[in-house]
Length: 449
Image (cartoon, rainbow, N blue to C red; front, side, top):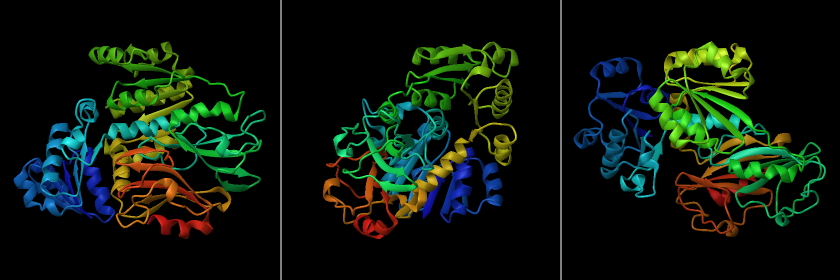
């Protein structure tokens, strides 16, 4: 795949290396001559000193022939202009890195549609999803969050006294944002159908929006109690802002420790339900005063890696139950494993690495990807890209006639994901997540690919 990247900062640099290693034909355009000379020695890519928001420059690098155009500079306007020009000059897919939420606000105008950008990517938002999926609750299976956290996978045990016991799924009137995927009973896995019934002790795996899944817990276990989680964020960064938005449920009691008074005021005005503390979390005295040893989650998410590491170590030593760390620079890549295993930091995320992994999945040309294996060899969870030649294009979900032993659990269209309804129509370019028994996989793919 021919790929053009604009900008050789932390994100662009890492993307260049990752995509080149994956076999992409990469061209990187960077304004800094010194940076270009360094990259030319270490990267297996075409490095060009130039201006990625110049139409003349883009024509010179044959932008009309590229499959993916990635504008990854630290300046939103440069990225938006570059992608708009690239799309107008014939680039197939354009992806812009953005920070300012203005560009994702569609209340007045759809900036993405107006500028012809196929995808807006915020590395800090991707990081926040990785952090949030651990905080929002355990009970997850080994499946990637679908569409940047819009669809989640959780497991729940059917407890004694649940009104779900003995009733068919089609009679349960579940939230339309939830889909029961499969049920584990007596060391066997059964893919759910409308006629499936649940029994006490069943382990049920379901798909849906995180909050819709959370509300379903009481139906599985009438004695389920909603325990609040105390979350402390060090730093009012973009990652912190995105994380606050993902943890909007009242069960999360959030405090933010921030050194800059202006940032404190802005956060307090924007998030009145969040406690904002003006102070420096690298101070052991402050951490002790805020009783960090008693919190459920402590997240170091400033732009300063050294301060993040120091405060996370102190929080862990004080007794915080779960400690999470954000690493911004590539200098610490070799230490990530040590930080998790030796220093008792459970989750370590990096915007540059998270973005590279996300882009690899987004740019993959594989029609079918395995997300997870079902327990006891019960089948697989697959992500399928719907091509223009797929026999299901233009058909509604209810008319697809999927084989018995298969189930459609998620549909992604233009980067919006949801649990599909019977009337949803499958379009070329969509992605679907399906669960299928091994003996029905061939028949299923014949209807999708």
